[in-house]
Length: 511
Picture 1 (cartoon, rainbow, N blue to C red):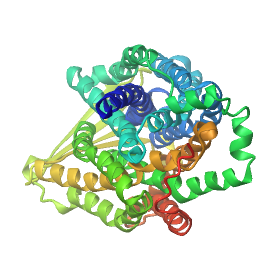
Picture 2: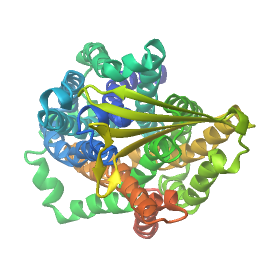
Picture 3: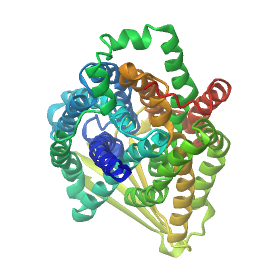
């Protein structure tokens, strides 16, 4: 009986995980390609503003996730878990594919960012319904006392989805020339999504409804108004707020700092070659991902609270030292330049608008094997530099290729952050499922999860990048650390609320 039960739940895990992983892949290729996308769908006059606009569009997908949680959570509690996350899978896949088909800003003007925004909003709505359904579905199949272990497999899907998005982008970059990738190759990861969604749909089509929900439905115990019972009931609403402010809010910022902000920080602040960042982040994620399952399993033994709170506390205390070390490790200011190998190349290049740009390329090499390239593009009009606010309009792109030693140092520093992620995220699905009764579980757990992750977590890249950019403009000596105040403060609030109000071992799943 035990063997049959385990075999059955592995089928549930694989079907749920496959779909959820693909949804995360769809969601994250946009963020992984943010630097490229900013040049395609937004005006090129101001690269910093275009990048911030891209991050804001990325964040918009997160902001609507709570609305998706309400809409699809209600459906899931009314008609069932299975059918609801079939719909979310198809909606996400379709929106992702279409993002890869949108013409550039140069072709259709402001329609480009508008269409991207609409499709990002659809992605956010779909993901808002997906996670709660998958986590609830798996938890309701899991044996009592093992929910942390089995739901932790769902928790790996977000990181695996991010990993696969990085690997697909890396493979596409390696197959194509830089010019081909920049011209059209960046669309390929979006197009591939439709194939994966088709496979996942076929797998999910043959799944059965959750036995716990099916039993409640046959006994007439499902909710007729999940939204009212979830949020109109003061007793239940208290748990919704506790889940948000005591757990998912802190978990959300730790998740996005340890993976997404780390990636953006290395690419935009440290100027490390994009392919190197994708590779080293991928390695750190592979090494760290098993710890989701470990901490999920451990939470079945010792309780969810102290593992999640421990992850938040470590993040609060160590983020600034970790990021300072990351920055100092690769900073060329700390390296010895081989002056005889420095080259400066000046050339005139015709643009697509048939104007001329003056381009200065400075290449440097350092004793430890690091290489540095800075490309300054001075935009000309009638042979004279275009002036903006009394200064020549110059775009500067810096690329640092790091040596093997620095590469492994960064892998280790990102891996430590991934451990914090696994501590807060591994047990959270079981923690949320166990807070709410079956008939309103999908709705009740989805909202705090997606507000915590979608609003507090999803806004992190845009807010933190703004803090860094602002501090740099003001001449702050450690401007690159200023973006960390956002996750540190949010995680600290969540840590205090969680430590005071959350019980450690409350496994009443209301069945």
